[in-house]
Each structure stands twice: as structure tokens, then as C-alpha cells.
Length: 235
Image (cartoon, rainbow, N blue to C red; front, side, top):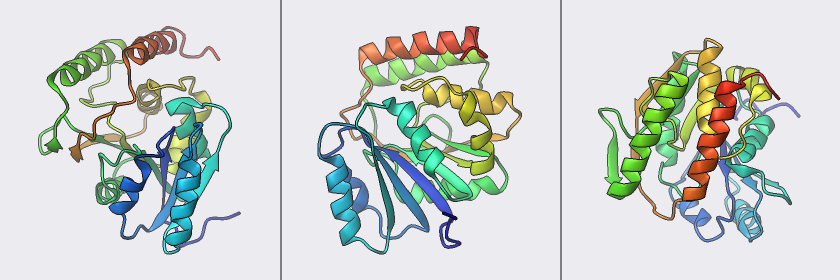
């Protein structure tokens, strides 16, 4: 089914067991010139909540994709981006740490770039509520490892606020292997490797707490990224 000309953007929201937080995201959305695609792959009532809100907000274009098995953060984003119909696409965390207005601002930068990543660590960023010092230390350590492994110069690969030209991201999606939280790094790296222009811009962000990234996830992220880096062309 072709995309309506009124749909300028497709914004993917991976929503694994977000039943208790997902309504907060809608509170900040007064209007959106695009479709909101929720990828629900958990075992709670997130999808039901989304569909109930969709019925009460007919002015918004809301799609809910249900999956019976866990896709992982990367798997969920890939499913959403694959289903997206607009010429400009992106994804944002379900916890509303980044507002919809900020995502619209990022979409505006695609006039001169193929991909735009929001950053909490470049001049001009606004952090209304910061993460704890240990979380910030872990973030900076992870970023250093990514710089050394992949040669990426970006300051914040993990911020859940990224937008793309659909044609550009579609070109690299079939080559992605990561399905967990390491997905962001591989996506950016493969786009840079393919010669696409990527811009990092400051963002207004506030820590909502209850991070879904645990210690075990960090180990799996690094293990997965090592496999991608050492064997980039192995399925």
C-alpha cells in the first residue's frame, strides 16, 4: 500500500514491555506529520495500551506491530523501519527521554544529510535530567571502545534518537547482523562505510531512569560488536 502524501515521516518506537511508560510518550504529542510505528514484542499489555490510545487519538497516524517473540532492540527497530512507508524515517526510545518536537527538528537536518543522530555529548545539547555518574562513566568508556574498534568519530552512538533518508537506511538494513543494543553502532558504521553523510547534532534530552541496558547487556553488546568488526561480511 503506497504511503499517503500527507505522511512525511515514519517514526519507529521499539516498545518491549513498556505498558507502564508508553502513555507518557503520547502526552507530549499534540500533532505529528507522519506515522508512529510501535513495535511491541513483549509479554505485557503494551500493544493493547497503544491501540486504545490510537482509537482515542484519530488525528494521529498510529500503527502497532505485534510480535509473539522477543526481537531485541535492534530487531524491533529493523522490523519497524522495514514496515515504514515515508521517505524520511527514524526511531526513538519509548521512554520519552527525547520529545517528538526534537525528533521533528532532527528530521529537518536531513535536507543536507543521509542520517542524523541526536547527541547528548556535543556542545549545545540540553540535559534537563542527567544520568547518574556511574552511568555516564560507562557511556564514555563504551564510546572510547567504539572509537577504537570502528574508527567512528561520533560522541554518542547510543542516544535513542536517530533519523534517516529511507533510501539510505534501506541500502544497509539487509547487511545488519546485530539485533541487540549494539545495533546502533553497527547501523552507523555500515552507513559510514557505504559513504553516506552522517551528521551528529545536539539534542534536548532528559533521563527517565529505569534503563533497559543491564550489565549483562553490555557484555553481549561488546561481544556482538567484536564479531561484526572482525567478520563484517559473515552472515
